[in-house]
Image 1 (tube, rainbow, N blue to C red):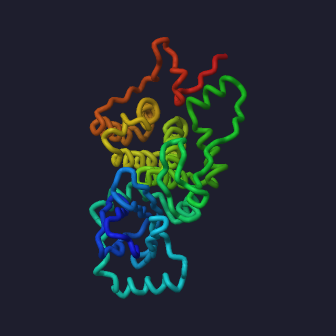
Image 2 (image 1 turned 90 degrees about the horizontal axis):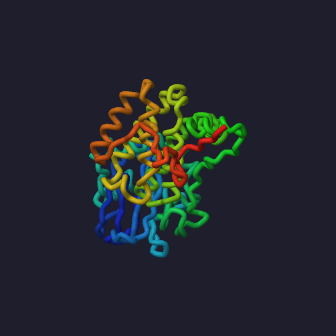
Image 3 (image 1 turned 30 degrees about the horizontal axis):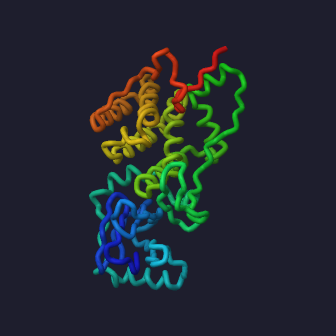
Length: 326
């Protein structure tokens, strides 16, 4: 239920958005599961976008928010008695005439993007005030405040490798780093990684959060560089491949040419993943993924390392492996 939203406001849920009219008071028929509600005061390119993740546990769950003229956001109600009154009104069909219906044609695509996000993931990562606010640029000044900061997992780990050969091995196969992160940052539960990966991608795609993009990029780069773990955690990586394919399916046609994802990051990550999976049980799944990406984006993936004219990795390539000569 979205109260007092001005006509002309851009409101979206999951993969659909609309410019709402005078009678709009919310969306009905939202299926159980994780969803992303987002809004902007207009559909202008420069309009600030805010949004929040919601988890619908049952068909009759009701979330209630009200438009703030001060912040130009839909803010969750906090008064329990007021919330209960509105919930009862919805369940008695008092608002049916003013509710738009959830677009079921997007459900399959949305589920592929969000099926690993549960209520715990949202509670763990969402800002204090629940709202994710669009940021201006990666590494630039953001419009977020302390209460709207997303609590992504710290993926950095102290370096414990000292021998030169070990440095090379760890950078070529990051399975040990993956396992250490699972143990130390994700309570031994690798499924939480997929939930965070999906949370970050949606917050970037729909919420225009570049903090979220950085988290998604870091996770993708790590997971595409785990040769040993592809076999040791085959079900996890099967789910990861399906998740990443769903994310790439939603990416715009210029995704491999825009500044954020051009050159090294995404193309290199996928090239590594396709190469490392050639001799695993995930080969067929990866081959289908590769053909789909090449067809959509008209790009080819080399299974050879990308070297410069001197036969070395480009020293300016932040994603190139660290090679230490003995």
